[in-house]
Amino acid sequence: MNVLLLLAIILLILMSIVGGKKGVRSFIALFLNFLVIFVTILFMLSIESTIIVTLIACTVISFINLFYINKFNDKTKAAFFSTMITLSLLVVFIFAVEHSAMIQGFGEEQEEEINA
Image 1 (cartoon, rainbow, N blue to C red):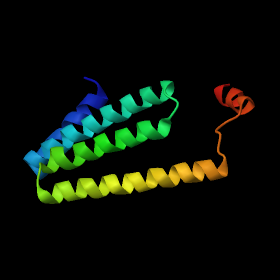
Image 2: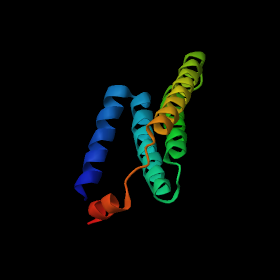
Image 3: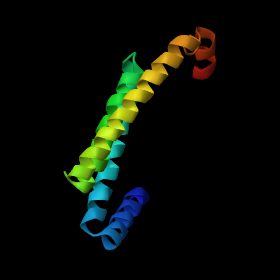
Image 4: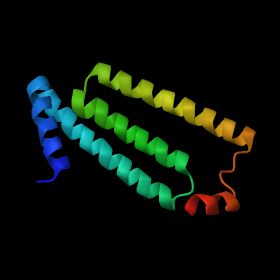
């Protein structure tokens, strides 16, 4: 048996003992979040606007963490909407700083050094 799989099973058992049903839901949410991050990395390799991809990934991860673990109620909805407002403000701030600082990323010479 793979060591990583064994550790995941131990984590599942401990989370179910400590947290009950909510612990199992948190364990599943952990792996869903990992899947979202993995897909996000794959999209970032092929899409120009990484900020938009990151915003979508943050929205999906917030949805998983809030609604899947805590279910739909008024407090969870308020937390999700406040998270979305915060993300929106951060994206506006990031675009403003990126535009005013004229950040272009790495030049061709620097990319060659990184790839080597």
